[in-house]
Length: 68
Image (cartoon, rainbow, N blue to C red; front, side, top):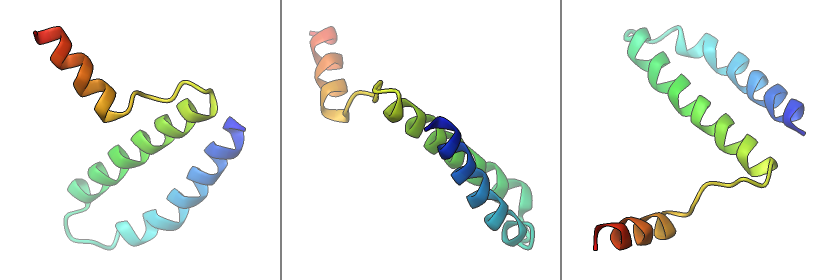
């Protein structure tokens, strides 16, 4: 399943990069694009492995309990 996810993201990137290379501010656009892509790949792999990250509400609750 992880291999399928990686292949899908590689296909998406291969379709997007030629268009992204046409913009004027390439460095900034590519940096933002790859940051979001890496985060999406990481979250997808975690979900497939049944190690999904905490929901924001649970995270906020834990932080508040830690502070008080």
